[in-house]
Amino acid sequence: MVYRVSSPITYAQQVKAPVLVVQGRHDRGCPPRQMEQYVARLQALGKQIDIDWFDSGHGSLHIEEEIGLYERMLTFALSALKAK
Image 1 (spheres, one colour):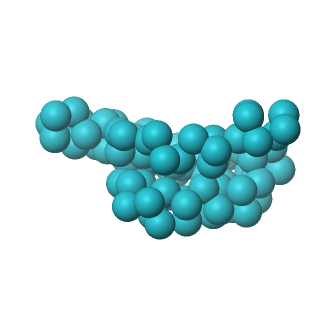
Image 2 (cartoon, one colour):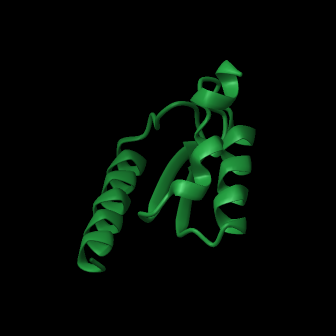
């Protein structure tokens, strides 16, 4: 019961805003399989979700990659705000 109540997938139907996920392929804190399931659920519901995978754990260790991820997040946010 506790897991279901605290899991984002439980509330996927209620998502109204576009979603961007930036996820490490080797993240031990937020396992990629959980995110793959969440993405699949949102897509099945017809929700707008974009996901950018990077090849490390819970954050990039490469400055250039980190800068690129922040640029991606800002571009996504600007696009979502313009759509309103």
